[in-house]
Each structure stands twice: as C-alpha cells, then as structure tokens.
Image 1 (cartoon, rainbow, N blue to C red):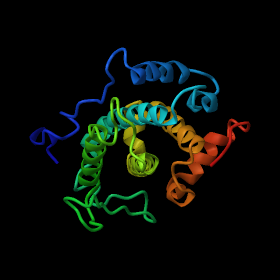
Image 2 (cartoon, rainbow, N blue to C red):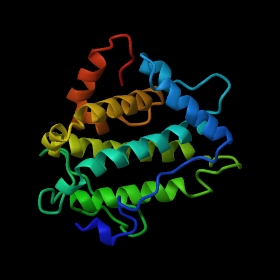
Image 3 (cartoon, rainbow, N blue to C red):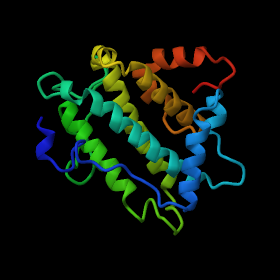
Image 4 (cartoon, rainbow, N blue to C red):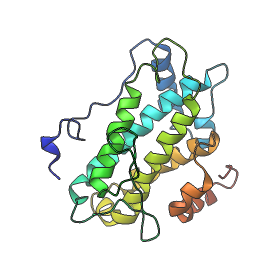
Length: 218
C-alpha cells in the first residue's frame, strides 16, 4: 500500500495537540510527568479534583499518538500481501464497520483496516461535539472512549502477532511493551475494554501484570 498517495495516511497524519495554557494542556503535562513514575497504577489514576472526562480525553490522545509511532515503525512490513487479513493470530479476525463508508462488517487487509481505524479515531478527536474545547462532553463520551480503546487494542494485537520479528530487528520491542503496559493500566483503571476483547493478548497481559503483583488486574 503506497501511503504517500493518501493524505490521510500515517505519513501525513498530524498529531492531536492541546492549546498551550488550556486546562487539558496542563493535564497533558501532568500525565507526561507521572508516566515516569515507578507505580503505573498511580500514574493513570485520576488526579484529585480533576474531571474524569478531561483525564480520559487527554490520555486517549497520548495513546493515539503512541500507536501512530509504533505502527509507523513497522508500516513498511504490513502490506496487503503480507497481512491480507486484519487478525491477531489464527483465532482472531477483525472486520471493519464505521456506519458511514462501511455500513456492515467488512473484511479488509491489515493496512487497510488500520488506516481506516486511525482515520476514524482522528475524526473523533477533531470533532468539537465529542471532544469539546470548552463545552460539556456528550452523555455517551465514556462509551466512545471505550470503543476507541477497544479498537486501538486491536492494532497492538495485530502487531504483536504479525510483526514481533520486525519490532525486535528495529529495536522497538521494548518501547512497544512499555507503551502497551501503560495502555493496559489505563484500560484496567477505568474498565474500558471487556475481558473477551483482551483474549488475543491475555498471556502477554498476565505476564506484564505478574511482575507487579500489587497492581490490579483486569
């Protein structure tokens, strides 16, 4: 897939940022500082006195930016030929539906699926009615965040199953593990993904959490 011909591709995709001096920019800075804490459970916990919706919004943008970099690192290896199906091993296949371009579950190659997914997330993040800069969040905001995290998880699942060798060769496996661990602590803290959706990476998740027995598991 030639991403250079698609202006909504990873190559051209701008990262979502917060206006300097805004409340969410301050929370974003706080999130960046706490991520280096030794206790990741504390790092993802809602700060005292802060809005849960603002905290979810700030962190979901960070997770989106992280997955952009991770997938971008192995993008050249994820092609229609090498990954004709969006899957996480032989047992798990993902179909795409967005109720707009794809109104029913549709089989896509992994690069097509992931491009559609990232475009979909970016459109949500740029939607002032869903991620407002000043007004109240919509009533279904939590369910939207849950849907976003569920679909971002699928990118991790595909990468871990289909591109571990490339991650190792590029020296990106350690960074990917760190980002995924942070992501899973956040998912667990706010119960964002149902357990059955986590099944493809259950073994990896258990391994990550087993090293820190005092942390709560999904």
